[in-house]
Length: 87
Length: 87
Image 1 (tube, chains in turn blue, green):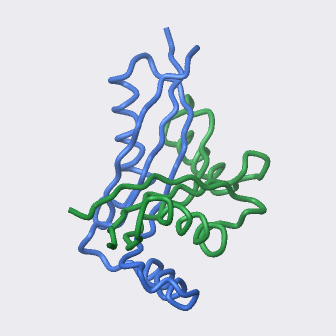
Image 2: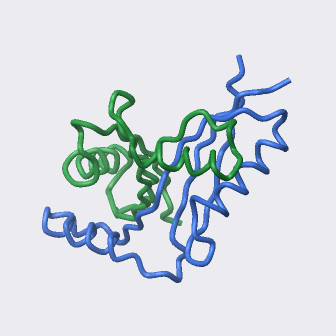
């Protein structure tokens, strides 16, 4: 039996890696009057719908896909949530 | 009193808007052997740390910042989570 899963994947730069886009947004916010913003970090958010036999296989798949295609493990971390949407 | 908040902001393309980057990732996955992936949508993920007097004000701020700077309300939706990290 195949189940359908929906995953929400969050990809962020490692904290040791500079984030120029985040710094740019923060300085934009300063100019809009938001001095109270201390830090902005920008990452990627991916929603993926796919079939897998069970939750363990589904997790394995998302891990592999993140490592291999979506994230750059040298400079990025990722985490994800998985929901079974078969019904 | 000022509280410190951490927000996790998810910005996604509206479902009626084509997502060429998502389609490209999906076709890349097909070539890697992942035929079972049905849909990929790519969005932005923003983490922001800032000060606000209370939760209502904090929400208001994030809403304004998303509308004004981070998201394009014509083609994008956003949602966010807020955590008080004062302690």
